[in-house]
Image (cartoon, rainbow, N blue to C red; front, side):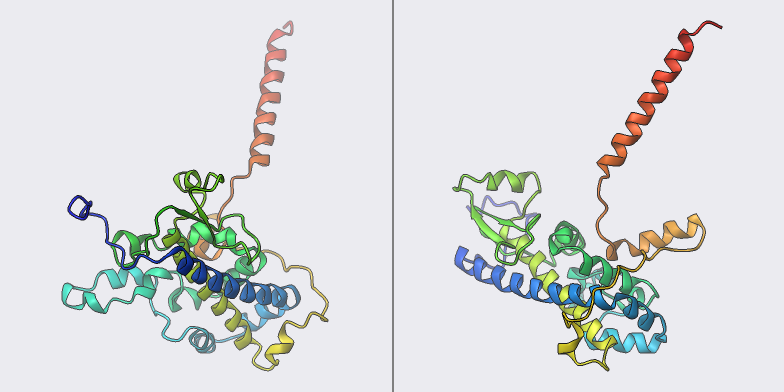
Length: 291
């Protein structure tokens, strides 16, 4: 079996049992939803204040907050590429974390709006919204074989469209009548190894963003920051650029990792098709009229 294996495919570092995968996924899911629930509660009551406090911070003050929430945060944009460029003698010292979180770096997050976008998108949307985006962000690490998922055959991990901690990361056997295998083939759900990677990344991301809130409100006791007795406030207006359209395109590209993944707006497409159909019908009627 081993002699016939594709030499271009990485050999998994471990082959955990279904019980081990379930235990890990449950622990990650519990931490993800604990942090997300608290973050969502804080944003619902204090997001406008968060924006004001962050924008009023000097660069060094922002840096202090980021490093307190994520010690050793890489300094440069796309740290995964910088790690990949290390020559062979230093390859063993590559920082694997840089390949898991390429958008977590000082150069990007010290910019005025990136962290605010990050907080808003992750706090206002459920974790499953970002599952495929978080996996795609690790593309460099996986294709370079720096990140090698564990392997468990015969199971599918359910993450997409799951909104509660009890079912998030649920492991389903291919023997169950649930089309679990086909969901992997259509990239709608995850293999157990890549699913665990997504859960690990999300657990760290939500803990980081929650800690950023704690650092921004260092003058407020942590147990009071998410006080449910405080009234919820209207969501602040979207964070948008005020420059020219050309500048906005470059800004949107830089800020894409911190925004919710783009969705296909089918309703708008239907409206456009109906409008085009109506225009074509009017044109045909005009052609039938006598000159």
